Amino acid sequence: MANAPLLAATTAFIQRAPRMLIGADWVEACDGQTMPLHNPASGEQLCQVPRATVEDVERAVLAARRAFDDSPWSRTRPRERQNLLWKLAELMQRDAQMLAQLECLNNGKSAAVAQAMDVQLSIDFLRYMAGWATKIEGSSVEVSMPLMPDAQFHSFIRREAVGVVGAIVAWNFPLLLACWKLGPALATGCTVVLKPADETPLSALKLAELVQEAGYPDGVFNVVTGTGSIAGAALTRNPLVDKLTFTGSTAVGQQIGKIAMDSMTRVTLELGGKSPTIVMADADLASAAAGAASAIFFNQGQVCCAGSRLYVQRKHFDRVVADIADIANAMKLGNGLDPSVEMGPLISARQQERVARYIELGRSSGASIACGGEAFGPGYFVKPTVIADVGQQHPLVQEEIFGPVLVAIPFDDEADALRLANDSPYGLGASIWSNDLAAVHRMIPRIKSGSVWVNCHSALDPALPFGGYKMSGVGREMGHAAIEHYTELKSVLIKL
Ligand code: NAD
View (cartoon, helix red, strand yellow):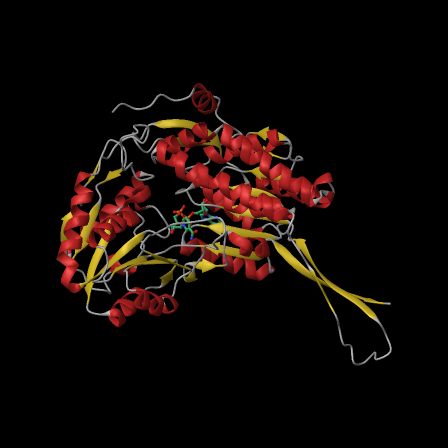
């Protein structure tokens, strides 16, 4: 099939070289520096965006600070916040195809899948958060105060917006990750400075246009495009930021966490993963194989909770691995604008090389490659790859590869499966494929991860908190939990 044509609006957006939004203004970097963006399907340059300086980040934080402290936004009622978020979701629905095309061009992912998944999940999540705006509650408590036995008190606990939020996100789901932070921030009355990933700022810049169109006051949402080492670091260290929320690698998350602790800035960290897919002997093997394939190959394996470690009960190991290899071999790779394409390129030449290095490491240490194993161009493609005959302590099993590479290991019984699944520094997600209800319920509490899926994988819903155990992070996104992370509690005691 041929590539679907781009909307005129998509082409125009890219051709006009989008700027950053700081306060009310669409601006260049103050020193005029730009950075190029590339289409991962071809390696060709798409456009240039501003490379924000430390001063640009300071201006954006100041705009967010003023909007939080002094603007009409600081006095908005819950109903207005609900209506504005709903309006923003409606505008995103109107422009869903354009947002999906921007994700495809900038990230390489399928435009059709981006529209159905990334964009729709973002819209659904903002609508879900619009509902929370009117349901943020404190509480009242009766106090004892034994040292003042004759006094009377009225005491209550307020839940207040945390303030200026510095949000830094990764490139694998650019729009969705931004909305996971924007939704609870705007529902609770915070203001935001977003630093999208260096590689993928386009959908965030389009989102900023829609935020303006929805009628948010100036400074409530600001976007600075730039590098992690300059713009990201400046946002992390800015004393006017009340809360940092970061989605990215564990290594950078650790740095940000340490900086946040020095200044006691509130922080949530959504980090890396190496999630197990566990196939028990009683599972429906065909659906387990299809599920395991999609758990690792969706989004080219560039998914924080991708099922990148496959554990299959020994007697069915060969069959399940062969079934997944068949699925992988049949996948069509290509440009995400072609609706028949099932797997696009990786984000960058750097990521392609990193994934290829891991595959080579497997080969050189005697692992068997059941399928795939090759990188090719033009563009940054890696064939969907399944690797067997590796030990549990091999880097392929212990480290996050962040590409379409599955490592498969057999296990003997339930205890063995749990031991292997938990033998990882990460703890983001896990799936169990089984119809043995008792076994499944025995296993769920023993798996050390923030999400456990049964007979499905990476299935997300706005109502379900998402986040990690262990090195996969601190805090949760989505669900009621997100509201808690964007608010502070204030205890009030009135002596009558
Ligand atoms: P990364 O850590 O390199 O970059 C993430 C963001 O941090 C980017 O915007 C980058 O510019 C910025 N950054 C880099 N250095 C910085 C610094 N010193 N100070 C401040 N900001 C800095 O990660 P990546 O390669 O873009 O993303 C892939 C990683 O993200 C994977 O580990 C993946 O598992 C993780 N991820 C986690 C989740 C989750 O919800 N847990 C979701 C998506 C991706």
